Image 1 (cartoon, one colour):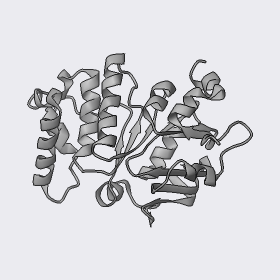
Image 2 (cartoon, one colour; image 1 turned 90 degrees about the vertical axis):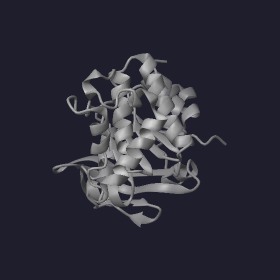
Image 3 (tube, helix red, strand yellow; image 1 turned 120 degrees about the horizontal axis):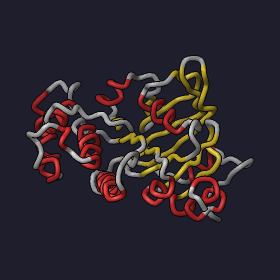
Image 4 (cartoon, helix red, strand yellow; image 1 turned 180 degrees about the vertical axis):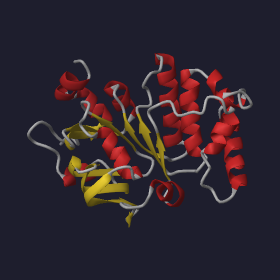
Length: 260
């Protein structure tokens, strides 16, 4: 039997979603959440393993970014819960989630400080650390790893290309040594060569540094090629779920989201 759970009228059940993850790191159960009094997610479930990647795709307004916002603490949560390794984190603030349970959120819009140097931008990632020397140590590790940033460390961030800016945004989140990366639209506004670079960097963080990655990606094909598992959202609920490769082959997903 395929580990792909279906669509349109026959949404995947909680047990189906659990089968896509064997040793769950982050769990969302029966979550209803939104902004103000408006509920966008309805009884939503999500299961992702340590060092697994999950891509959320679907039409605009389906609730993809609202899932990231809810995990990070930017929404009103009406019911349900969010847990890491069995510890409930539903009502922690974003700062608490970053500092105590290692969740980092990488925004979709250009969030570098253009007139600050690359190094200063990186150090901003550790602004809530108690010990600033730890931020410097993490920044040095990042400069060792990414020559593109090392070569520009003393230059203002506005000199960076679009791809280098996205690398800086990702790297800034790494200063806090998170275990979970929430990545909103990593390819948005980038030329194809930089899109490939950004997904290579995310792949390295998942495979070599064992980060759990949950991403929202408009470029459904690219997102599903990258991710271990995918959820297709429609109107605040999961309509289809399966392995990334399987969803790429699913004719319903192809017709709706891949231009097939």
